[in-house]
Length: 175
Image (cartoon, rainbow, N blue to C red; front, side, top):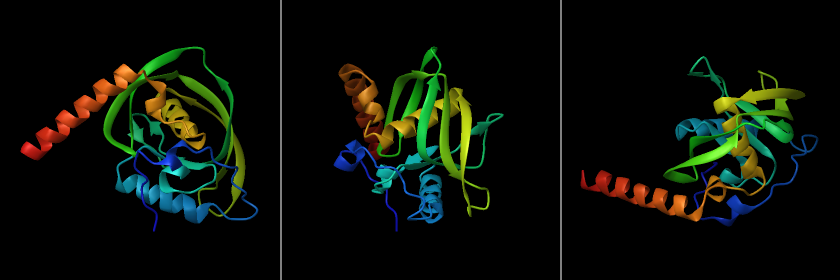
């Protein structure tokens, strides 16, 4: 049974190896990851967040302001990033209730392996992600290289966000 890895944990800081789809079919891992992401109401979940050592993540896309079906991303490669950068709000399932404003490119051109809609075959795709989809993709991509969203903000911003999280948790406890 897959479980969520919570910070601080060294697995979240580990660069993951390529997923060998010839050795292991990714569908069982991907489906477990999608279930766990949905259970925790996440928009994405990366392999090291579940203690899995290979490059795979799952993410939901936003289509017309609605959540689309989850997609499986295996061994992604970034081919291009927009020059335009935007600060946007992010959270992370491995850092519950921590919200940060992170600066990221507003679009990315990527290629990766994924699964067909029936999860039987592995195919290669090239895709462009924009706005929130690019943010989700880049957040999860970072995880594959041991980079957490807390690494993308200043120490001061992180400390302020930690204080807000502690206050919110105290309010929850005290009603």
